[in-house]
Each structure stands twice: as structure tokens, then as C-alpha cells.
Length: 186
Image (cartoon, rainbow, N blue to C red; front, side, top):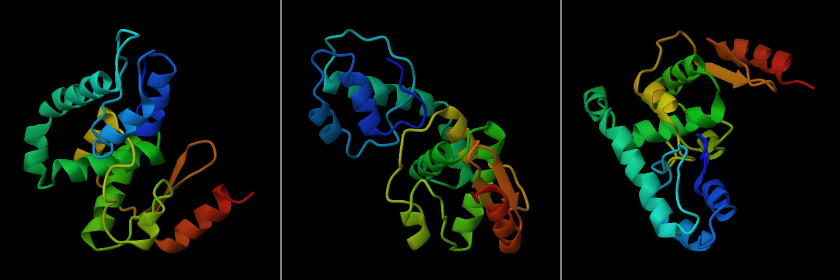
């Protein structure tokens, strides 16, 4: 079963439910309520008789293995693993390429540092509240986790993604408004 980067627990449950005969979707969703962000996306070779509990253990153990490699970088970043994973989940939902994830990572960390709302479309609460969402919004892959850890320093404060998935950046809000009119208008 392949779990793509950026799938949330509901999407993961659907993927397993379609392939596993003993899989209990509601049990999976109850048990993963606090694990969003730590169910690692990957291709898993599992018996068709796997259960909700065994799949959760498999995904979470893989997350632990993957994160173990970058823990020293997390510790030296001055940020918590939870913060890194939450930013990574937003990057996973917002932009496609590694380069764009590194640039948007810089924008989001800068906004956090000055108390500016994150204002990302994938999590609308970030327009209303300052700070990170309470938890990751999906389960990011290593590219997004690395981008959250190593943002690319830029002069940009604003970004948007057009209908084709291309990211466009702006240094000031007036430029951002021009980008919105140019790339998001019908």
C-alpha cells in the first residue's frame, strides 16, 4: 500500500480500508487522533490481514526511524520537532517542489517570528490566529521536513500557488496583490 506524502489520517485509513480485509477504519481514526504528522508516508508491504493497530505501529515506527536521522539537526535548530513537523505539513499542502518548500519555509518562519498570521490556504485557521496550528494538518515526507528544518533565506514575505501548482513570490503586500490579480483571477 502506498501512502503518498501529505495524506492525512482519513486518507490513509481509506487507502488501507480498500486493501486490507481486517482493517477497522474507525478504530484507526480513533487511535491516530494525536498522531497526525507522525504516520510516515511510504510504500508498505503488509499482509492483507493487517489490522488498524498493526498499520499504525508500522507507520509510526517508520516515522521514528526517519526522524531519528535528523534529530541532531532539530535540536540545533532551536525549534521543537512538533514545530518542524507542523511547518512541514503546511509546506506539503501548499507547494510542490523542494525549492518552493524551502522558500515558503523561510516565509512561514519569518511570519511566526514577528507574530504575523501564517495565512496559508490549506489551514484556514491560520488567517484568524497567530502561531502554528495546534497539530500537523497531514503527514509530511522527508523533503518537506528537511525544508522546514533548512529554510532558504529570501527577501519574500508573501507567496501564492497558481492553478498549475507554480509558486509566485512577493516582497511586499502590494506586489502580492498584483500576483493575486495576475495568477488567481478567472
